[in-house]
Amino acid sequence: GENVEQHPSTLSVQEGDSAVIKCTYSDSASNYFPWYKQELGKGPQLIIDIRSNVGEKKDQRIAVTLNKTAKHFSLHITETQPEDSAVYFCAASIGGGSQGNLIFGKGTKLSVKP
Amino acid sequence: NAGVMQNPRHLVRRRGQEARLRCSPMKGHSHVYWYRQLPEEGLKFMVYLQKENIIDESGMPKERFSAEFPKEGPSILRIQQVVRGDSAAYFCASSQMGGGMDTEAFFGQGTRLTVV
Image 1 (tube, rainbow over the protein chains, first blue to last red):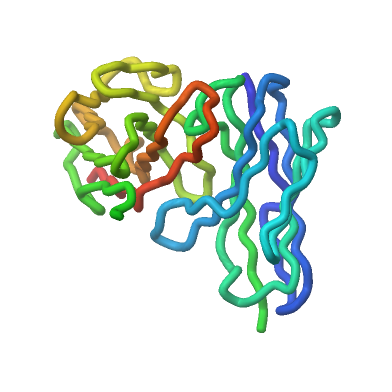
Image 2 (cartoon, rainbow over the protein chains, first blue to last red):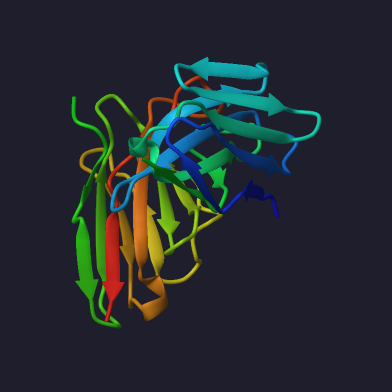
């Protein structure tokens, strides 16, 4: 079946450094790629997304890149802060369907050390 | 503007009992999705519903699990005769539109089901 691979599973950085999380997907029809941040005991919170007609998108300290040919996309967080510590999930839409119908990666636990 | 509301937040059931999980979508949203998350795992898609219709239930076990989204009221995920393996966090998400339209999905805080 279709799947999304996410690496690394854990990531530890010093405050102020950059963090990069990478994902690959298998479904060629996927056209929507959101990133979610999940804090302990809470639901996933959408932080940024990208659609297949765009190669890069940036929102303040967060950026996402998409390479449709290689079927991979990445999350970049610059100038990390302790409050960025959380589990981050990438996801890809199932086929070309609804943007709530998603396949998730297994998550990256990001720790930002002050 | 309330977000996606799920209740209860925590639910404990004995093996063999029924679990009912409720989800009220964001105001104006007519598409609801249910996901299951096991500890240290990503979210797994279960079912996608619109009002009074199941659009995609490919991720939902064929037995003991059912979902509905009636014309009035919240969406319900129902698990009959629960077993220990059903213990997980169940998340609901909603979106304004579906079918590839340009709207995001927002998640609720989840219901943590524990089967004892």
